[in-house]
Length: 612
Image (cartoon, rainbow, N blue to C red):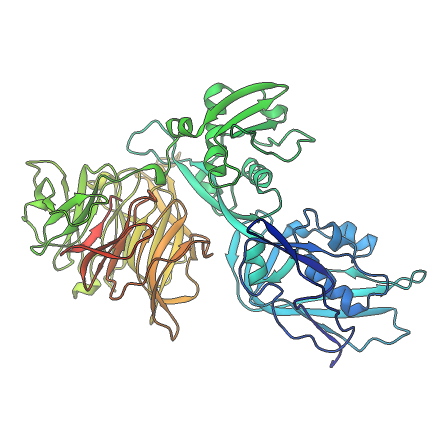
C-alpha cells in the first residue's frame, strides 16, 4: 500500500531499559521517535543480556498511530508482570479480550509494522500489518517449538471522539517479539513428572522425567514454575508420565509470590483437593517440586506443603533423592570403549591417562571383535555389534560369562547398511536399528535377551542411522537419514500390554510424535544425551562447517556455553551426571572435556560409551 511503516528500534520513548552491573543501575535515555516514515529494522536488544531489565512506558497524550503501535510492541518485551502497561495502548474492549498468555511468537528479528495507508488529520481508524519471519513459538502450556514461515497479523487502531487519542481496538492473541528480546525475557526450566510405565530395573523408586518449559525470567519464575508444575505436563509428554498432585489441585486462592525463607525453605499452600493425601504421595509431590525448582534463584533447599491450614509434609533436596530418581542422579562408575584389538575395555569415569582394563565377561576377552558397544545402566550387561555390523551379541559383565549366539542379525549387503550402535533403556531393554534398505527397522530386545520386538515408528520417513534412549526410558533420540540430510529427531516411547481380548500376546512398543531437535542442522554425525532434557550434537548447517553444540529436546538452544571445538569427531558420549566429562572419539583417539577445561587426550581406542 506504500503506507507508513513502523519498525521497533532502540531508544524509543516506549520503554526504559535498566542495566544492573557492579552494583550500579544505569538508565538508558529515551530518544524521540518520528511520527511517520521508516524506522530502521534493528532489534530493541540486539545482544542477549540477561541482566537487562526493561520497563514499559505508557502512551503519551499526543501519541501518533505509529507511536501507539511502536509502544505496544515495545511494552510486550518489558518485565511488566501482567502486561498492565501494554494494555494502556488498547481500548478497554480490546484489553478485555486480549490473552497475552495464550502464546508467544518469536521472530528472527523484531516485528515490523506497515500501515495500510498514510494517516490524515481526519482519520478515525487505521490498520497496520505486523510482519516478520517466524523462528519459534511458545504455547499456552509454555512449551517451545521451532517455527518457520512468514508472520503476518493485523492491528487496528481507532481515534477516540472525545479525547482525540489513538488506541488499538483489535490485536492478535498472545505476544510477539524478536529472538534477542525472547532470549533476554524468557528462560527454560525443567518441571518433573514420573514415568507412568517404566520400571527402572526393578527399583521401587519412580523415575522422574524432565518436561522443559519457558517462563519469563524476571517475573516471579518460582511461583510460575510451581503453578506450571501443578497444572500438569505438556501435551507432548502427558501420555507417558503421571503427576502425584491430585487432579485439579491449585495453589490456595490468594497465595502471593512464593519465596523461600532465609533457610531456603519454600512453603507451598495448596487448595483443599490436596488435604486428604497420604505422606508417601505428599513426598512425591515435594520431590517433583524440589527437582523442578533446583535451578532457580534464590535456592530452594526444602519444600513444605500445606493444605487446609495444616502441614502435609516437608522434604529436603537430599530427601528428594530417596523418594525418586532421575537420570542426572545416576553417576557412572566406568567409561567403556574398544581397544585396538576391538575388545571391550574400561577406565574409571572421570579419570585421565589411566591404563584401561578389560571389561569382565566375554566381550572383554576378545571372543568376538566389535565395532560398537553399549553397557546397561546398572553395568551388569553389555551388548556389542560385530566388526562387519551384521550381528548383535549380548553378554553379562561378569567373570566367566559366555557369549552365546547373536541375538539379532542384519541382512544388509554392506557394513553401512547393517546394525547401528545399540542403546540400553531404564528397564534393561536393548535398542538397535537395522539400516538394511530392504528391511529397515527399529528393534527392542527386552532384558537384552528376549525375542527381538520390532518397534512401530508411524510417520518416520527415512532410515535410522543412530539410536539413543534417554535415562528416563520414555524418550528416544534418533538420527534419521532422508536423501542427503541427517536429522536429529526426538520421539516419545509408548508401551501397551496384551489387549483385553488376548489377541496381542506381547507388549507393543511405539515411538510417536517425532520432532526435530536440530532444525538448523542438515548433517548430524554424532549425538548423545547430556542431561535430563539435553543432548550434545555434532553436525553441520547448510553451507557451514562442523560444530558441536548442546540442544534441548524441544528444539531450543540452552543458555550454556557450547563445548570447546574439536575436529574430526566420529562418536561422542555424555553421562546424565553433569560432573562427568564429555568424551569423544576423534582423530586423536579417545579424548575428554572436563568442566571449564580444554579437550584432553585419554588413550587410544574407539566407540566410547557411558552406561546407557
